[in-house]
Image (cartoon, rainbow, N blue to C red):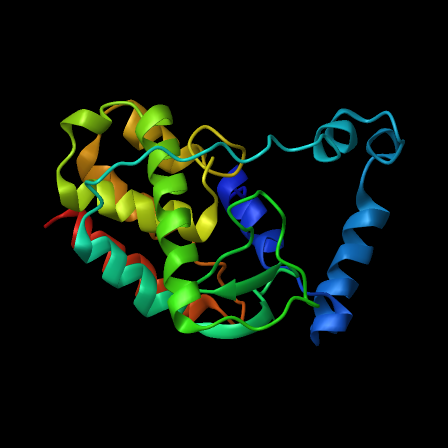
Length: 217
């Protein structure tokens, strides 16, 4: 029996819905995990609890890039889709338009926000794309050596999985492949992040394959 990697372990929780999301077996599993965890991991001062509760960094102002590949924009719009009213992104985060979770002033989207027009959704998408692009450009090594397809692939992946995915916990495999410049390993690394066994697995698999198509283009 093989041991779960950090990436595989985190995938269990990436789209955790619990009973409120209609997934009672997930809540049962959490209860089992709680009972089997060492007591030292359940105290308030445990390192993982303190790290989990740390305040995330504030969004940085995006710089104008002017070089975002249109193929990446089209892919992101296709898989995000447009919704005028706030909706649950699958993990309890209020989202609007084409996957926007915050506005230009840094304020988070809330479920009580008013609906927006598609034109407003396009404005928010442009802002988010520049924001995510800027972070990838400044945090991912060899960015300047990558093709437009490779950059577009990572832009879409970060848009879906988090702007600061590179070097973060749960992203060891893809981080290592990029850090070590193992370009041929990136496609299989991307295929790990599909939350296997969940209701969103099929959609994530399609998205990952589309992103891989950009990577190898």
